[in-house]
Amino acid sequence: MDKKRQMEVQVEKMKDRKTGRIMVFTGARQVGKTTLVRQVLDDYVYLSIEDPVTGPTYLQLTAGQWHELYPKAVLDEVQKLPELVESIKATYDQFPDVRYALLGSSQLLLLQKVRESLAGRCSIFTLYPLTLPELLTNGWDDEIQLSAWQRLLQQPDQKPSFWPSFVLDPAMPKKAKAWTYYQRFGGYPALVDEEMTDDERYLWLKDYVRTYLERDVRDLASFRDLEPYVKLQRALALQTGQTVNILGLATALGISSKTVSRYLEYLRLSYQTVTLQPWQRNLNKRLVKTPKIHYMDYGLLQAVLQKRGGMTGAEFESLIVTELYKQAQNVLSDAAFYHLRTHDGKEVDLLVELQDGYIAFEIKMAEHVAKTDARHLMDLDAILDKPVLHSFVLSNDVETKQLSPNVTAVHAAAFLS
Image (cartoon, rainbow, N blue to C red):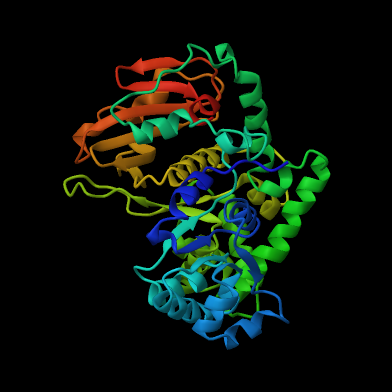
């Protein structure tokens, strides 16, 4: 069963505009880029650049031939032949009625060429694995309901309201089912097929790690020996949600710090991780300056670690942080994501910067939350350079609690779905 994608709304708005004559879609493999584009741009001709027979022939077409043969076209896996971007640029510049969609799974190879050749000529969309609001849909005809988090991003001056208990929400059974699924398998669209067994889903994730991720990295990095990368991938999965000690990783893996830094960048560029930079604008406060890295998808994290279930607190934190991040990207929010840690022990799991202030999060896997769980969210205004608009403790506690005038504890699924 296909799930409706929030990005569809943005693409629909853009496809007939002058600024939508060239649209670039990027994101990890198998996140549904082709499905989305074929759904929205159904009058475009689909061209697979990855095809070894037909792909190279497109390089021989002149701008006039592109205009005559393919005035509207989807070019899938265009990073395989980045020279084609020059052909599209020439066609765009000569013929005002052409429209193209460029798809690719390599952020570095595709976007680098796009920035070189198509600056000012294209709109860029990034597609991520399914979010909880998308998982709750039953097809492209469904309407996606914004989560409380997405509503807050759009109207930060209006604090969202919640049921006194998640159990009282009439939609709770459906949301809880989606939440349970998400904590087991993550958000890759292929896995929502109801005919798949759990064993088949785990096997799909395992194969994805072996085939797509390692192939992407080999393409991206042009190195022959994947073993050091695979070791770092596993080491990082074990440390998801924690600050990254590059020197420690290098020593443990027997590789240089420069290589570790390069591999970390490959993970980010292949959309497997989200890096939270440390917030450090207060020069009078001693702040930790090390970034945190979160695995993007919990299903893939399990596949990398070759485990099933047994989620740790750090893994739960990564699941929440990346879901908050994906949902923000889906509504085209310009929010900036940080973590904050002081040398005297104060730590904020996630600090989201908006134009007029911050939203702070403490993330707990616990089923019961107390006021002490919000202690790091208190008195943040004394550190930050903008006011704290709202603070939340997200957990598995079904009871909604006002821990202080500006700190609300709410079930994670109630906040995110």
